[in-house]
Image 1 (tube, helix red, strand yellow):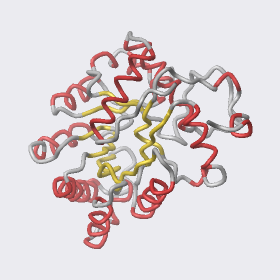
Image 2 (image 1 turned 30 degrees about the vertical axis):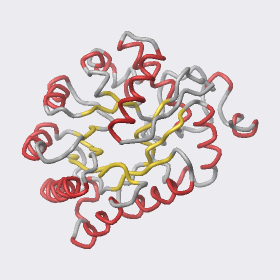
Image 3 (image 1 turned 180 degrees about the vertical axis):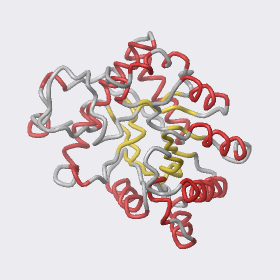
Length: 286
């Protein structure tokens, strides 16, 4: 349980404890903004019933840091991959380093990897090369995939279709695209991760009509913190940093648009995440 000092960081109105544990499948806890108070952040998350967090590894350094955190803190796990922004750095040495990380028990998925044709910090050709190399690593390790896609839905589906019989499972994290893209991913038997984007009436309203089309056995929830602070919070935070303790507010918003209770949404997404990442069963807390 969090101490008074750690609780004080969140206004009382934001200290929402759901009835069942939640799993945050995408938390960038290696981000520098968490450097000063990470232990308190984890305590606040646990007090909010966010009992398990998957720490995202987006390049070699951050994947190694994610593994280190997973070794240090109970309830934390790691992914290991190269984000499409950094795809230009892919080489044989990096491939070997990633394969070594994938063999560690703390690593539960290959990624964050995929395609991002919105900014093209790496060229599309470099992105596709690094993505397919990481698909091969996922096949080799047997681990599920933690995927990133932005403005590249058609090409992503084409590549995944070619690999689908060989990879185990995959989740498109922080899904923000349209109905056709969603149905294309579901047709490939992929999982979908939803963030606080759905809480943003300026740009996420289209997701609200799509939520109920996602089977609960394919749906997971995430913060993508420190980014994407949800706009449905009933009180303001000092600063704009998002953190896992706020995941219950995202789950509540998703449940509202799904048309089910918070408890039902939380229980279903937790069970789905446990199966997907092959995590120990999280018992209901008193």
